[in-house]
Structure formats: C-alpha cells, structure tokens
Image 1 (spheres, one colour):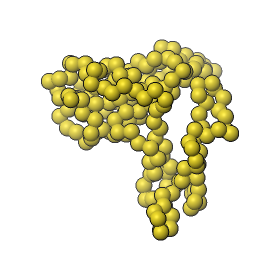
Image 2 (cartoon, rainbow, N blue to C red):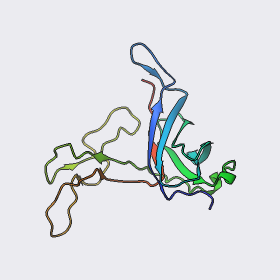
Image 3 (tube, rainbow, N blue to C red):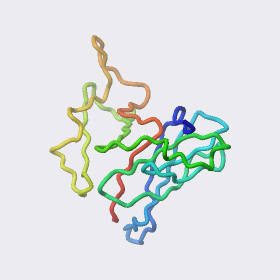
Image 4 (tube, rainbow, N blue to C red):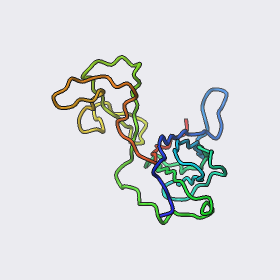
Length: 181
C-alpha cells in the first residue's frame, strides 16, 4: 500500500463559510473545510481524501493543513482522511486503496481539559441532532454514561495529567456538514 496512516494524528476539521453577512449569518454553500493534522513523519507529502475521493496533495513536507471542498449534505457525516505518500507518488490518486466507509456512523474525539474541575466519578453522555437541527437530550448516542476519569480494577480513580481522549481515529476524522445559518 502506498498510503501511510501511521504517524499521523490530531486530524481536525474546521468548516469555512462561503461568506458572512453583517448580522452574523453565513452562506454555507459551497462548503469548504480547513483540515489540519499532526505528523511525526519527515520527507513525506500528504494527501487528503473526502469520502474516499482524492481532494488534494500538499506541496511541501512541512505542510500540515489544507483547504478542501466537501459535500453539502446533512444526511450523513463527511469522512476526511489524511495519508502520507512518498514524494515520487504524490501525483497519484490512491482512492482504490481506501477502505469503504462504515454504513452506520463515524468517529468523534473528545478532550476534557484538566483545568475543568470535574469531580471524581463524573460521567457524561454524547448527544446528536441527527441532521434535524434539534438535539434530543433524552436519547444519548452512547450506550451508557462515559467516565471522565479512568479507573483500573482495585485502584482509586485519579485525575490524568494530560487531556483525556475518549475515542481516537488515527488519520481520519468525521464532520457533520452544517445547514446554512
């Protein structure tokens, strides 16, 4: 496989509006996103794929961000993946090497900052609007409440010295596209 995902993490996606009015409303179509990532790799270029389709290649091995066009649908999440490639292969489209998207969902990465003074034993739930614009706070999408602080059998819960990552996807991220505001 020519696509390399090991060594790439911290993929973040920021929706970019097509325009902003004086009253704060925005134009969401066409929708672009700023994709940022971290990488421990050197002398590699990076390719970004949107829903399994090639979206672009970096022009420098130090580049760690790219603006890409994304589909404007509130029906499903947009899958954005970042891969490293050898510079001599940067012009090639490797979309046939990407595994298909799971049919029933995406991934989310949550960070709870240490500065948030949350009590030992605190839990939280995750909610979603399902593209409707109305969040149902009676129906969390997680099966059971998630623990804020990790515990091990036979030990007391403790606070972590760093951020808690609840769920991590190595080199890909998911984004729910917004409707126009």
